[in-house]
Amino acid sequence: ERAAALGRQQGIREQVARALNNIGGFAAAQHRHDLANSDLAAALEYCVEHDLDLWRINVLALAARSMLDQGRWTEAAQFATQLLQDPRDSPWPHHEALLVLALVRGRRGDPGANEAVEEAGAVGVPAGEVDAIVDLAAAGAEVAWLQGRPNDVERATADVLAEAVERGADEAVCRLLYWRRLAGLPVPAPTEASGPYALALAGEWDAAAAQWAELGCPYEHAMALGHCDAEEDMRRAVAELQGLGARPGATVVARRLRERGARDVPSGPRPSTRRNPAGLTARELDVLSLLVQGLRNAEIAERLFVSPRTVDHHVSSILRKLEVETRGQTAAAAERLGLLEDR
Image (cartoon, rainbow, N blue to C red; front, side, top):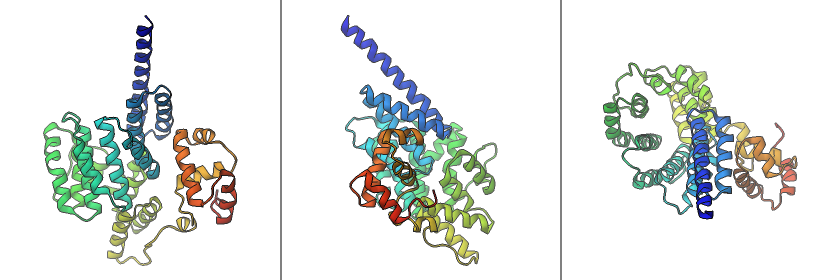
């Protein structure tokens, strides 16, 4: 009877973990970022508390993709790395984590993007996981485009695109055609499809940028702005991409500006970035501002709608970058460097 009772309890915990995953995953998929941040943090805490490790790594995969969408790339990479360090075998989470790492590296111009795409392809998600397969093709195409390899964009997308057309998966078709268009490959104009990718394919870059902004996706928003005709939009795109640390994308847009005869095109980081000699990310500055107020990690996590473990990572990174050993030393270091003058 005791064994049966324990089994029922475990079954209930599994159901709760599944429900929390579904809730957080739905919020992330709908780009309801505030909800996703709080729901996924709650799901992660529950899974850790009850030793539900397979569900925990699923939450990490969802959180990694959500952080990527929000432009919080350091956190996205942290979640992905934490997942990949887990020895448990779960194909989709590992596939997703590798793609997030590939895109963070590719968008930043860091090494290892191609290797992460190849590793994701080797994971071998089931053929029925069509969304994951489209994700792989799109990530491979984006990394290839950022690296100036248009032929590899064609190879990354051709087969998956044909299958998506056959299924009538309009969103996937537009997403893959988008990268083919940027690579200079001939693409048909969408007819009944909707969404920012379809708008971009139709040449309506202003409308695409507006939709990406509404969805809270700063990288995609900046990339769409970079393809607008107005010089003001393109300059804004360069500034936003540099602020995200998206060097390859900023270089592409800056080149387009120069080709149009624009002068004084920024070629380095924004002034706000240059004023940050410690190299802290925007999110680390958020954590630092609360840290110097004396808040504990759990309190910071509540304020920023992230998990305590994420704050732990940020605090460790802040101490390392400021070259201090204790939390108490951070305030003096931040004041000395003028890191919080505008906050």
